Length: 278
Image 1 (cartoon, rainbow, N blue to C red):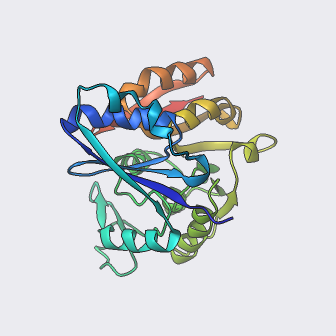
Image 2 (tube, rainbow, N blue to C red):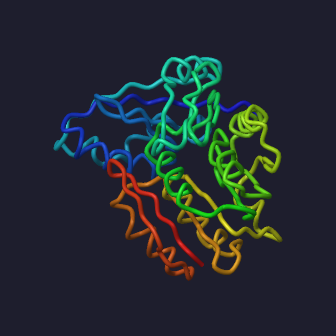
Image 3 (cartoon, helix red, strand yellow):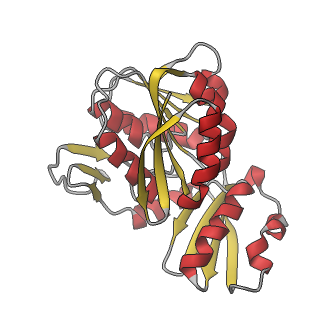
């Protein structure tokens, strides 16, 4: 299966107050990834989920309160690779974890993750991935059975193994992410990670985990929360991100309905990561 995306480039006046609303509305329509820019936000949706009138349902575009302009185009996988390479700069998380491409110099931190992102999301640059790594730095992962749900580049699964987790399952519905995760796992010489292409149904029968990581958009998290809970061992941990601080009430309500207790929260530029215990 060859997955193509539609890329929307939004230029937004009053950026700080409008972008959060815009992203929330786009997420509800199936847009799955966002990159905030100096002028607004760039949003991506799989072509199969897109139609030419999809933005008719976005209220903020017609509210008159903000001035928002946009353009869009189809992004082929080959072109996407070039865009990532142009914009992929090395990062560091809490001076302990480096995330870099193969052509970047190794800063010799405690953990060094080498990622070639291609078309996959989750390079460490977005706030949500950064916070997930921060949360994991504080956790004891040694010999924990772990799931990275919506693994993207495989970065969180790779970091989990570096911190001692095993065995590790990594799942993504997108074929390109699946293949990219395999490449990055090999690049980092990971030995305890198994990658699957699919969705939450893959863990719906006999799978159980001590820790589940899910850095996905809000609507998918809400829809799959029950299955995440069912697949957690007693006292297991569910680590979530991919949504804004304003989404906490609806996320927390669904988590509570499934018997989960909030034990930690990190906030970064209005995005949040929540850690729950069963």
